[in-house]
Amino acid sequence: MISGIVPDKSAERLLMRLMALAAPSGKEQQVVECLRQQLTTAGAPAAALEMDRTGRRSPLGGEVGNFALRLPGSVRAPRRLLVAHMDTVPLCVGARPVRRGNRIVAAEAHTALGADNRAGVAVLLSTALAILRRRLPHPPLTFLWTVQEEAGLHGARYVRKSMLGNPRLAFNWDGGPAHKLTLGATGGYRMNIEIRGLASHAGGHPEQGISAIAIASLATADLVQHGWHGLVVKGRRRGTSNIGIIQGGAATNVVADRVRIRAEARSHDPAFRERIVREIERAFQKAARQVHNHQGRCGQASIEGRLDYEAFRLSREEPSVRAAAAAIQAEGGPAEYAIANGGLDANWLTARGIPTVTLGCGQNDIHTVDEWLDLDEFHRARRIAFRLATDLGGGGKTSKP
Image (cartoon, rainbow, N blue to C red; front, side, top):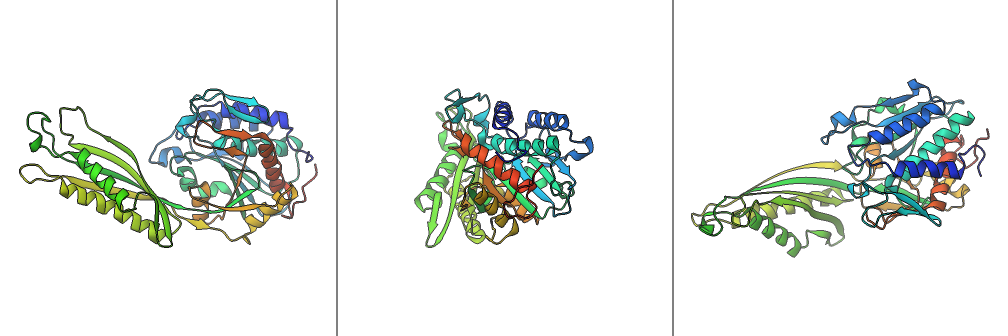
């Protein structure tokens, strides 16, 4: 065991407590309260703890904002930022974590576990507690627990940079094995589509109506038929798109006059992602013109979209990447380099001038009821985080208490 690190059993108790908290995106208050209590008890000064107003700035609203512990260094060195998001996907609400051998799983078959990303939260917390309780030497450190990552990376997008203390190295803990280093991620664009038709009696005068559901169906079929839905491959260009939510209709005897749709497009190539967005817009506008009533009136489609996060890719020579690879190597490496097809807090942190590499904590089958956590990998992630928080040289040599 690395000198000074929180013992495995204590860290596991923290982990189980954190995973049992029901805190999906926008409802992270219980996690913040747990973190604040643990850090304060370990000796963190009140002035070192801070929460921003992301809960108010985010389009989702939210109970709380991003929560940070900022420590001055006991030696002169560049500041380091350690990040993990607090929220889970809704499928995790109600989960009861149980240990089965060297795994942690959800007790009930109908919930996900929430190791994504309470395992990351626990990695940061156990590292901070070790430093506080043992008064270990360390460079200037900022521990940041973000909100609303699963709902669009809102925490990292709206975090107040002054709260971070101008870090020179930045490390984010999320899904996957502890030796995985994610250097980049795709960019994501989300769309709200509203289709307006015309209501009429579906039995008495269906010809007078304009079915918004028919318009939505034609547009979706068009995208599938022409290869613009799901995995999108056009020559050497690749991306994805999805019609994820459809809401509309009131009764079977009424021609539906309104449908609301939420869709998304992703690609590592920003120009190709824009092309996918244009094809989605084309399909819905075309379908709206195709469906009309006996008087020749047709439907309408209005589309609003926003860039949730831009794609990025770090060099293996980026200082944060090199430091993380050295810490992994010291814990039995080598590092496995990867590029993610989903968004990460690192997308927005990098876009805001803080190049951030992402590491795993042992989470498997995330966002499903089969989710489980590998405890060996979790503890390895803790040791890696401890090295990165206390290693002044970036070469894997760990500070001693």
